[in-house]
Image 1 (tube, rainbow, N blue to C red):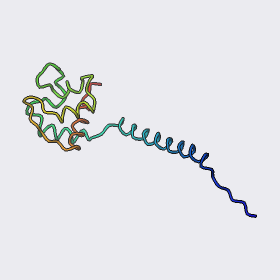
Image 2 (spheres, rainbow, N blue to C red):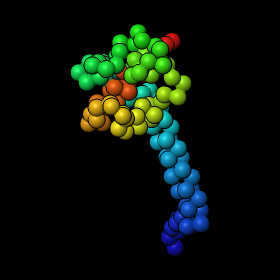
Image 3 (cartoon, rainbow, N blue to C red):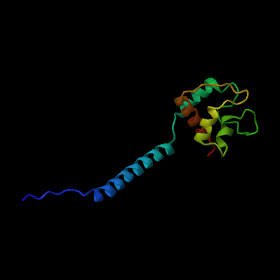
Length: 121
């Protein structure tokens, strides 16, 4: 008589669930690390700002007065409330007399990276 070894569904289910949860946790951890590194190219963002934003904003980071209208990019970068997400929402929402530019997702990421690079250390 030949013995065959089979896995019981009762024992495979929890093992597969643990494996799946482990894989999910690993992928989330990797994605979180990538997000923490930031997205976008600050140099390319400066180029976009130079072509579109410099007419109204101080883009070099020197102007840090938050009461100036429109604020300089340095003042924007120093606002505690500014995160990549809040900048993305702002850039995609019409604001008063601000021109409605249609930035590509890459340009948006680049401008966000540039503004964040101006944060006072």
